[in-house]
Image 1 (cartoon, rainbow, N blue to C red):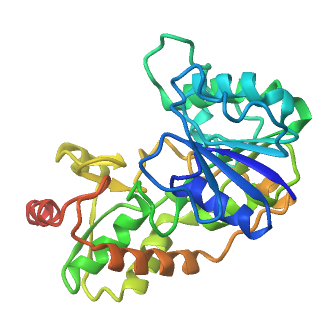
Image 2: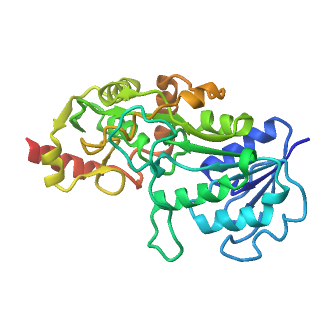
Image 3: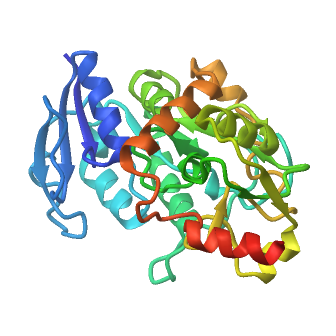
Length: 321
């Protein structure tokens, strides 16, 4: 029986990884601060990773597989120091945000990355992930570093991909504001495909866990069709959106999936290594259907971490006139 330690295990992605490994008969222990339960069948150790003694309860045994999703390099370094010598395999979930070049298309895992974060630096997600990767690399051929792109699926706490399902659903037969899509691409990976890969892969090294490349216009059209939206889409140019206070990509008053025109490489990365390592990708329409159903269940008018509120969208549409 495989003994697995997940540093996390109660969040969106890490919880799915835990459940997937339990299906294979692994014994799974999660180490987390609490506030959310561990998946049924997994044990939970409560610990704050800012505490120097965070790993004392799990450091005295051998682990077949340790999985870490942290975006704080200090947490990763402390975990490797406490547990690395007794881990048969170590998987670190990083991000394509480590890459410093967002213009080159079809870039693979050898592309340049940001300088690593140093202690005392102002927090920067990409730099923290780079520094964490560097620590994990010290484990040599026992380590797998997975660099996902945009992770999507039911329950997505980022609200980015699901925004478009909600936008079309709430509009019913009314208009929906969309960015100009020409020349823009979307790459997403379903959370269940990613957790399957992390739970079952035997590969080591660095792997981009990203989906197939799709034109943004095609993705929006598929989302519109899946929701049954009967209204029109109204296209706004980049300069107009920026001038009217709409943000790219994420956050309040944003249009998710819309990126600056010069970021041609951010969602066009190579997934050749992922495919070669056995990584699967379900059809995008299947993921979209799941997301649409999830948005219906969770409520299309709920508070979101990304996107436009409907009243803001209607105001912008009126201005665009």
